[in-house]
Each structure stands twice: as C-alpha cells, then as structure tokens.
Length: 418
Image (cartoon, rainbow, N blue to C red; front, side, top):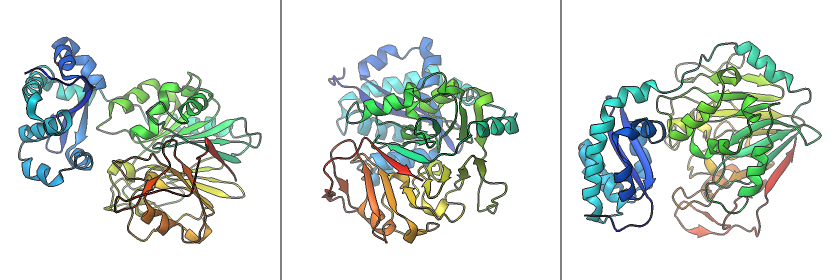
C-alpha cells in the first residue's frame, strides 16, 4: 500500500552490531522517496550520513524520551523485529498502520544491502593520533592568549549552546565554547550564523560533547575557524552523522582530544586532569554516569570550562552536578542541560556565590526545559536569571504546567564582564 503522507517523516531502524550495540539507521524523508532511493548503489552514502553504531541502552533511553507510550514499548520489545515494528508505528505513522508494508520492505532492503557493512561502519570512524604533538598544540593555543578573556558573550540560540570569549577590546574571539544553533530559521538565528562565520583561526574552540545541539553550527564556520586549536572529548564508538561531519572537517594537527575519565576508578587530580589555556581551565565530567537524573553518558562526560578574571564563569556543557569532578566556586553559571528537571540537592556548586544564571532554552515541549524546580534549587540567594529563549517566552514546571516567566523579550545575546 502506498503511503498517503506528503510530509517528511523521521524513521529509525535498528540491527544488531554486537551484544551491547545496535547499528541505527536514521532518516527524514517521504517513505516513497526513501524506497526509491534505497539501493545498493547508495550504500556508501547511507553509511556516512544515515548509519551509526549506538549503545543499546542509550538508544532505548532516547526512544523512551521521545515516545509517549513507555509501558507499551517495554511490553512490546522482545526482539529486533518487535523493536523495529514499534519504531515504525510510532515514528512513521503515529499509531496508524497504513504504511507498515513500506516499512517492512525497507527493513528487508536494509538487511540485504547494508547488513554486511556493520564492520565497515565501525572501521569508518575517523581516528586521530590523540597524543601526537600534544605539547605543540597546547603551546600554539597558549600563543593566542596574549591577553586573557575578559568578556563572555552567550549568544541566544535557544535550545542549543554557543558562547564566545573576547579580550578587553571585545574584538578578538579568543575562546568559543560549543557551536550549537537552533535548527528552525526563526528568532535570533541570523545573528548566531554571522557570529559563527566571524570566528577566525586565532584562538580555541572547546566542544563540551558531541550532541547535535552543541556542534551543529559547524556548517557556518569559515575555513580559518577550522584552523583554530579544537579541544574535544574522546571520540565515540557511536558517532552520529553530525559528529562525523564535524570531525571530517577538522585536521588532526589542530585537535586536542581529552580522554575520558571514570572518577569511580580514578580520583580527580588537579595537576593532571585540568588543561589550562590562558585563563580557561578545562575539566572532564565523569565518563561513567552515577546520577540517575543525568540523561545520557554523553552528557555526563561533557568537558567543563571555567573562565576566570576578577569574576568567573562556569560553562559545564550538559554535565549535571553530581558528575562534576570537583567543587566550583564561580560567579556566573551557564545552567547545564538547559535547566532540565532536577529534583536532588545540588552538589559541587557554591550556591550563595552565584550572581547570575544563564539559561539556553527552547522552549521544547519534548524535554520541558527549563524547569522551575531546577531553578529553585539553584537560585537560593535570589540571583539574576537570564533567559536566552528565541521563541515564545514560557517554561515548564515539573508537572508539565506551562508557566510564563516575567520577561517580555529575551536578548540576542548576553555579555558578562569578568
């Protein structure tokens, strides 16, 4: 039966890679177009842009977040075939079975054309010699910091992260902290795109982790920006297409990859576990999450930046507090994970010292960020809260009740003087 849908639909299909991993194929197109396009001649295209290795637990957690019917998924998932049927019902059809025949055809083609390339997908993950010329790279990064960062500009990209550190002249983008940009062409997107294009080769870029909303601004970077020193987390077994595309643009001699640390096995050591570039200190989150509120291992292992002047700011990526390697006493905090629901005492932050909380948030009905309970736990001293929300101005509490904050317009960016 031919599909009646004229809109693109998101499709997931999964296959076994090994005992702990799936090969995940992800698409967004009309079913009829995908069937016509999905041929053996396109295998290399699909491998690069649509297939990746994903830890089974992480993928199932992701689907649970996206699905409204968690209990049904758990009850239904007894095999790969069951999981694929569940995904097709919920992602192609939203409960309407009219397209199941097309989905079954696609699954058969996937096994026929791409199934034998599992090992190739794994081997295609770019690998750099992380330790090669590490001292030369650090020395080159240090050479850019004739002056320290004195101003941090948090650019309004809504449900993403993008901040820039300037020297006292406010002209040189010495440090860039994540390069995420909101996907939809609305609000402040044009301003963020211009700022991404203005980044030159003289400085550093720190990528906290490889989630889409922290790296997808790579599309707007100039060639010179790719010649900066890039400081990144350890590469993953399961790179997403966006992550692969970013890494394919970067040159090994410009990259410093910081290896994961499991702090349950290794105690934090300030002498060896902090990378210092100018007045930027770069830490690593916990490679093995212990906090049940931490949504993914990828979030937990985020690189964490502290920029210090007369005052200091903490930019923790999406790493939540229990995964911090040490205590932080800072004046400004970019709230991690877009102020997700967090119903625990907050560790490793000197809360009374905080002057401002900066929140990058959608709003996003799927994640329900930012969350009032999180803000209340952080904001014990009544500090200022700066919302960077380039769409409708509301947020959610943990009971899914929409609450409007007392703000009329959120700024294009927020500048902090250290």
